[in-house]
Amino acid sequence: MPEPRHIASRDNALLVKLRKLVADPAGYRKMGQVWIEGEHLCAAWQQRGGAVLQAVLTDAAWDDPGLRELTARADATAVISPSLMAGISTLESSPPIAFCVSWPGAGELQAGVASIVLDRLQDAGNVGNLLRSAAAFGVGQVVALKGTVALWSSKVLRAGMGAHFGLHLVEAVDEAALEGLGVPLLAGSSHAAQAIHQVALPWPCAWVLGHEGQGVSPALMSRCAQVLRIPQPGGEESLNVAAAAAVCLYESARQRGAV
Image 1 (cartoon, rainbow, N blue to C red):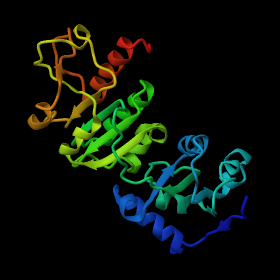
Image 2: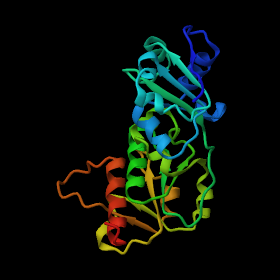
Image 3: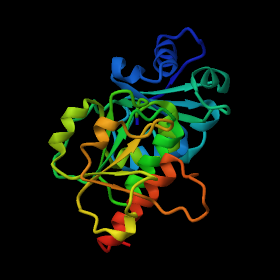
Image 4: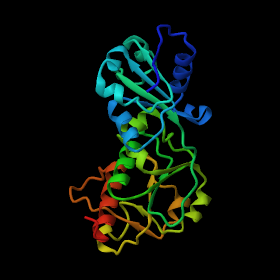
């Protein structure tokens, strides 16, 4: 374990760089690095064998053997005060530990892989929850079309609760590139004639999830092999996109005998 560097000035070059990285939700694309905050996410990253470019801990965290152990394989470690951590953190209550790690890049589409396709989704919480559902139900790839919120932003990372680290993520994809998926596209619509449990769902497939207000674009909907309805016997169309996705992915898993 390398000796930590103790930093006391907010004008330190490392802290200036980290504040710049965190200030822009898509800043990781320019800087090639991702900011991961909090013990849960840092531990999840370590459990996946992820490399850590820079670990940052508060003074108290460095004195905690469990948190200090999380930095054992970090290339470099900095120890700072809670107030300096608060100046970097995107959380209301700043964490005791955070990592700076390499961004894996925009990713390349993998053909023949069960996927979800995000069509211009804007809410970071929805996208993070979608990633969690994908990981839970055995969907290996998440494809974000251009106009979708940045997948590796701090808010999406927090909502994803570590799901990012077990998925193949592809960002800023043109709609035409979806031909390369090589699996049927499925979409949901409250106006569809058939319900998802009334038809045999293909596997692997790609479930398409649309913008929170506008839904799936008409052009993308026309590419879908099936458009299906989720029954809502309560009489209200009240499922948001993350909840609807969980239902669709569960039904896919149920039909293939995975649950």
